[in-house]
Length: 171
Image (cartoon, rainbow, N blue to C red; front, side, top):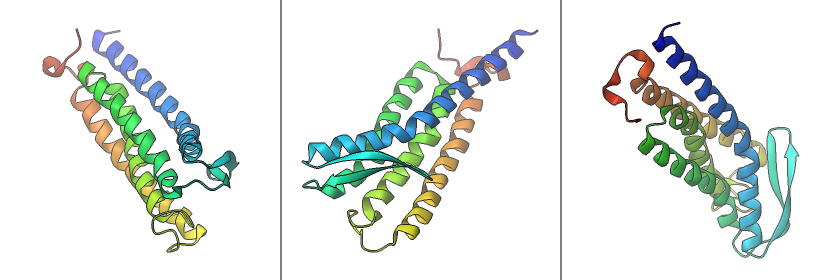
């Protein structure tokens, strides 16, 4: 087996592992951030599994519920962005590519959630729960899809196994 084929298999395996890890860790961490910010602002609640994933249920309203609404997506998006930055410095393009869809999805959905989640969002009275779920899912998927395409572009533009060593930043 040639060296380039080994590099390609290793790169694809690394990408798939990171992609699956970030995808499945995303939902519980997003809700956990909501729950922690809820408690920081004097509220209380719990995380409940739902048909579409999970949600943070308020049992005691916080002093600033809109901050709680923004916290999950923007908090996790910021964590992902920090990881992207550190991986970019190291030239770990597989991890950058696996993080980008989740990061952009969290940021796009987080802004939408903070603005429009019924009853606590900045414009919370503007949408019904059904509209919120429909539009929120669409916005999250759009951010995820854009991140996936951008991530693949970055990964393949820097892939050592494609024979271009000029972008190799690793030692």
